[in-house]
Image (cartoon, rainbow, N blue to C red; front, top):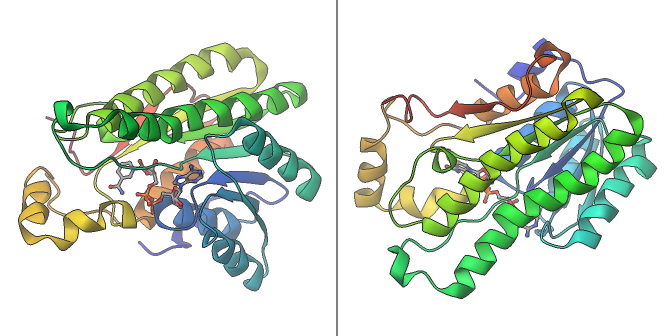
Length: 258
Ligand SMILES: NC(=O)c1ccc[n+]([C@@H]2O[C@H](COP(=O)([O-])OP(=O)(O)OC[C@H]3O[C@@H](n4cnc5c(N)ncnc54)[C@H](O)[C@@H]3O)[C@@H](O)[C@H]2O)c1
């Protein structure tokens, strides 16, 4: 499936979507897919390369803005939510996707500095996004939010304890947020990708031994492309998913089917 194929099935005309972590990878592919389906896109990322994602959307005739945002900073996240409203008049959908991987090491060798750094982005970042997005969405009485957890938010993988802990917590946070806002017109779900070909795992794919090891764990026998993840995000954000909230969806080629 190529970027844009999903756009035939959905229309987000008149909707504003906030996406974190869209410089590269899953966030970038999803930003392009939302824009292709007519949404105005607000991108928050620490990496200024995300400005190119917004530029690509605008060059194709869409609407997008980039605001440099560290998801671990509450003031910056609130400013990003405010920017969606000032730039495009509303915040209808959010995709909380920014994330980081720790160095691969057994738990006793993980440093406290890496623990704090990973938890700050992968867990606190999602909490802060939810907090400020839900405050706005509760005022208008509608909204759809999708968080990116991981197969590591459903099962553990060796050598990445801070990430596994953060992603399991994002799985729980998604359910908790869904329950708190279920009667207020706001849905909160999460996607749990398996291996996706993005800069995050390029060091694994570049090493033939590591690559064979991670692919041995993949029943489908291959790595997903970012565009194969975007379709589920668009579905969950759309009115087709109007009864779906508090759910976690693996997108993992049967990795968690065992
Ligand atoms: N690639 C995979 O195999 C895989 C598998 C499961 C889950 N995920 C998750 O998917 C999400 C997207 O990752 P990806 O694979 O596309 O990798 P990626 O590295 O391409 O994208 C991560 C994005 O997050 C941004 N980011 C990092 N720290 C940030 C911060 N403090 N504030 C704002 N933005 C920040 C990066 O600049 C980048 O744009 C992550 O949450 C990741 O944990 C990835």
